[in-house]
Image (cartoon, rainbow, N blue to C red; front, side, top):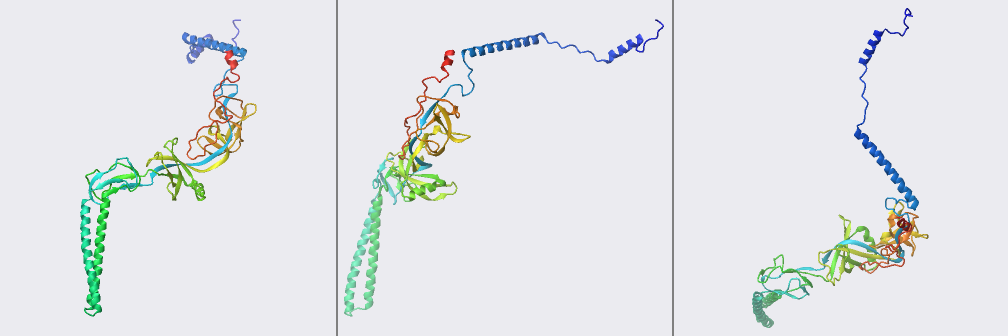
Length: 460
């Protein structure tokens, strides 16, 4: 057996050891195994136990709620599984005024600066600042003595020239007699006639001077040229006033009647002109800057003769009696012009109108306490109500409160004490809109819990 040759795979022992050592040197060093630190393993183990506990608790809660008949409340606005409480109102018949709104400025019909027409010393001021005066009331006095002296001088010159004229007229009569007797030349008669005409002219000039001085005396007594309210005094007594003074003595502003100039878009002009040309008197109402407080009611007086091309608007003037003196010059006001009235219109509150993908619609109450999205066509409206030209009938119920929680076919429950119902608007020009109760108006304050919630409370 010792003499048998080795097999083909036999390797001498020395060569095998050399090859192993060579392979060990060439191979990369072995990697040490990754062992998690003890702290990390503890955190993972605690998290797994906590997750297991939460799953068990959640399962128990779900099982208890299933046994008691409760369902988890969905998140969002629709948190009640029962009918949605809403407020409703009936569609009513009424007259809807067609009005146009514009911005205006109170402009007095007369704003007069009282100035002196002669020069002189202002001896007296007879008015109080802010006083209401009438046309012809005494306001101020200028020293009349210089003009009185000038009047007497003019009267004296007039008397002198009148005497000369009388003498010339007598001589003319004598010359005519002598010429008839051929006692004097014809030239003498003609000269005397010319002298009479000359003296007549002088007398006329003197008479004009007398009238001028009398007029100056009238100007010394300054009176109110118009009725109105007196402003602040521009000059005090004792000053020398002249006709060239720019500020004058005082400014008088007429307050009754009062006008307002306002503007409207040119697109609204044809409707206004149509009513004006038919002879109608259009009512105008003035409100304060906020548009809530009525100041006065008046009428449309005139329309400007051209459109402003820069703004595309036209100016109109309305006249107000201003008996309460609520309109003040240069005051900013909101104007409502009543153009026409739409009779027997179907009216609903503005809150009932919804807008969405189907267009303009309302939620119409159907039998069985359900609602349907009813498309409607809108007509003229005001701050409270709007007219419906198509889509609704009188006495139908529409939703005005809670519509944001509804969809087509949703179940509803009527609540008590709802918002103001639709009412026929007051067509009296300038009347402040007031809410009126309408039969069928839905209440808003719930007295009973919606169906499906009583059991939930008892279960809790």
